[in-house]
Figure (cartoon, one colour):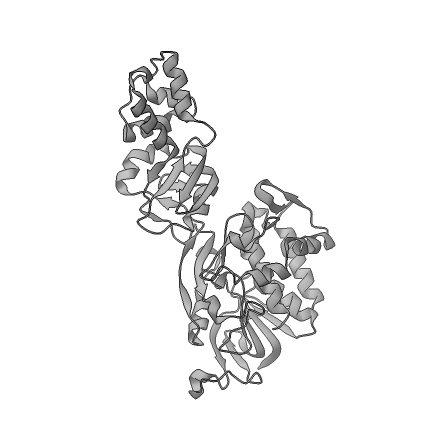
Amino acid sequence: MIKKDVIIIGAGASGLMCAIESGKRGRSVLVLDHGSKIGRKILISGGGSCNFTNVNISYTNFISNNPHFCKSALSRFKPGDIITMLEKHGVKYEEREDGQLFCARSSQDIIRMMRTECNDAGVEMILNCRILDVKKNGHAHETGQNEPIDPSNQFIIYTDQGIFECESLVIATGGLAYPQIGASGSGYTIAKQFGLKVIETRPALVPFIFSREDMKIFGELSGISIDAYIKCRKMTFRGSVLFTHRGLSGPAVLQVSSYWKEGEAIVIDLLPDIDIYRFFEEKQRAKSKTEMHNLLSEHLPLRLAKSWCDLNIRSKPVNQYNEKELRKIAHHIHNWDIRPKATEDYKTAEATLGGIDTDELSSKTMESGKVRGLYFTGEVIDVTGQLGGYNLHWAWASGFVAGQYA
């Protein structure tokens, strides 16, 4: 049996950051991961350029049953902290729209940086390691006791590469997004095994799927992209809205999908920079006989303008509409209701909503309140960021704070 002070299950962003910080404190640290490479999600982030943080980080960019939980970690590890680490290693980066920071070259630069930091901190790693079972000597579920566990009691991790023992165990297994690169629900299983509550999970930052009826109308629009506002409940996002062969995608759609629930409508402003009613008035004053779908094609792709008119109005020359009709058309263009059937699944989702209930954890340390020495970091927790580098920053921040105590 190999004994370590700290064992971290998961070699993603939060697990590696936790390992580095814990190792810096002189702790003996071992990272276990079932994959053949570290940081697999880091590698694909930002299309291979790694959107590693956002300069506009705020707790309001995150979704959780307790929206205040993430405040402590975010205040102690800020965008400037990960930037300092990049600069130390000569990793060049660039700021893009909406404060998003990307590697100027490749996400491989981040992987090399994390590997070097781990080496410098004395962190050991075992990859291609499958976890078979996790136990804790004297755990309340085995003894029938309800009081907190004696911190001297050790965790035992059974794997296909041996048995390991540790004082602090960190679960950094991520969520369910991207099962094709190894994502699984193992972190939730371990949490439940130790009696922790898990908030129901579902895909986040994910495309919408149209109903069969809507696909008959919009299927031919696949490939069309527009700049629009999209709203769901009180949340509004602006960005690209892309029609696909299944439904809707694009940055604005992914953003709003995290707030949408089955059965709800989303509202799209097709022309956010244009007062379309005033445009209609100008055409009427000019006594235009242009068909409405052709008129709208001055501002929208023709195929979209035609389909929208076929669905919502009877297209006729603009000079044949009265004021009430034009106001109604203008309202619908700026407030187009679509009711998606569902979202796509975890294969195309960029993150996971739900996870370990934050009421079970210390916001200062990420340690379980029920099981001393048991920590959770990153996406496995019920904290989900918006699109734009927020989820990776949560991984860095939660891993950093856990590493100060594990």
